Length: 424
Image (tube, rainbow, N blue to C red):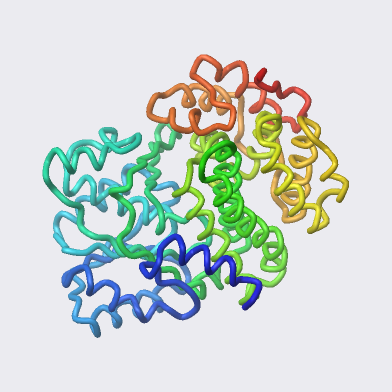
């Protein structure tokens, strides 16, 4: 429909003809897979209604002449290391020439990382950071098995991107592989699969999509790709703000489900243009008490205030979207500086409250001061330094306590006034 035309055009610009997406496209998976290999392993999620979709995948592979060597249970939320180890072992035993994943971001991320370990060996710690997989492939003169990533949730954009998030459950810390070498060869998303998603998962995923577009937009100021990122962010954030409340009210809203699929896909596009920063960085230390999308949603208003003087253009764009949707006054366009940042942060919080989200960490069951200390410690880890560098006001490890500390404490209480801006 016309309301989605620009979003569709942007996705074609991003993936050209390599992305199979839309309504009722799942039966075409076999044809896509057969272009990459003839013996497949399927890593799959288990959720209500999943079996019927998996059967569609099996039939499609069979019709296209692809042998299904075996099926592997996917990863739990946040892709724990234990699940990664299991999936790696099972992939080694099956030895496919094409990997097919069917699941949310955690299963797709685990499949990406499992293929890295299956091909290159070593420990997953060897690959956390940026570009380390590609360098290891060059050094060893090897290639990863191609990956057909079938997304089931409008959220992470994992089927489209160069990221793999893996969590150490014992420490409660998530770490990240960032590498062009792990981008799935052929992404697939049948938006109809999301129709049965519960309201909480729908909201978490949609807010994750906003976080991707918002954080990359903030970090794009002054970069050559800023105009491109403005367009992607405008469509992505607008679609979520406009359609998420109606989908929560009516989970069977087909138009709204397609809108959220397009919006979060654009979030995936965003994180291939530039990197996320503050909200994502902190979310990695909250995995034991919050879903990823919910953690990012809580944190981003507070980082908005921290970054405000440096992101005036993005704040005008985002403020206008929230004003048009009724979450802040139209007079927001007349504001500037920190005052504009506070107004946009308050609009974001108002939107989150309207869909039943907590707006402070203090409202989250199980949250403690220990999470603040964990987040500050993690921010100083060299393996996550890309998140500090991606901030619109870049921070060094030495600046973390002084500037991130107040952001986290503001997020605990909701008091925006305690956040300090970095001097120009």
